[in-house]
Structures are given as structure tokens and as C-alpha cells.
Length: 152
Image (tube, rainbow, N blue to C red; front, side, top):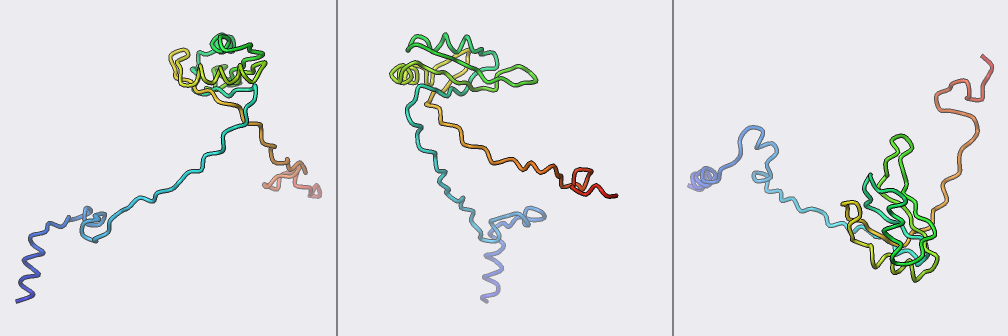
């Protein structure tokens, strides 16, 4: 009797067939719960006169960037980082003000604003991290002529 009840219950629930059964989470009872990971954001940069500006259009020039930030203080230098091959903007640049107050006003005035049709983001620039030391021992991993063994 119990066997008939189990068979009747199995017929009422529709299980996937074919490849669907192989990849189905319904038949195995497995429930996927995504892992909640917390991405640690770096601490905000120290206030400085140098600003990092991201979200720039490919058409944005260093002169255009300087003109956009000049209303907020005296801009010493504005530079859009460009690709060496194409000459187009890489989408970010730097603006240096003469005073900290001008830099703070530049961030407040331009962060989240449109420039050349794109929304840009301005924040204090972080100092560069030191690059790892170069391994300059004239050797390569392919065993070519620079592997240190010149006796053939």
C-alpha cells in the first residue's frame, strides 16, 4: 500500500527529463544560495592637490579637462592619459591644483558631472605604489641563447 502511495506521489510531481534532469536542481533537492562576499574598498586617499579623474570620453583633451576644472580654482596642470598607438584617451586623467581648497572645490563641483557627454568622477589621487624589482639577469625561460650557457 505504501508503495502505491509513493508511486502516485512521484507521478504528481513533474521531474525534468533528458539533459534537463542532469542539470536540474529540482530533482536533487539542491538549492543554490549565492555566497555573499564583501569586497574591501581601499581607504579614501589623503587630500592632496592632485586629482584623479575617471570616466573621460575618448574625445576629451587635456585642454578641455583644464577648462572644465578651472572655475573651481587655479589649475597648475591637467593631463589626459592617452594610448600610445591610437592616440585616444584611456578614459582617465589627472588635474593638479595650486591649493588644497581648489582641489576640494574641484571634486565637489565636477564629481558626477557631464564632460563631453560622459559622466566623470573626480577624487583625490592616490600615490603610486612602488613597482616590483626587475629580474635583469639576461636569462629567459626558453633556454635560448641568453640562458647563460654559451657552450654548445
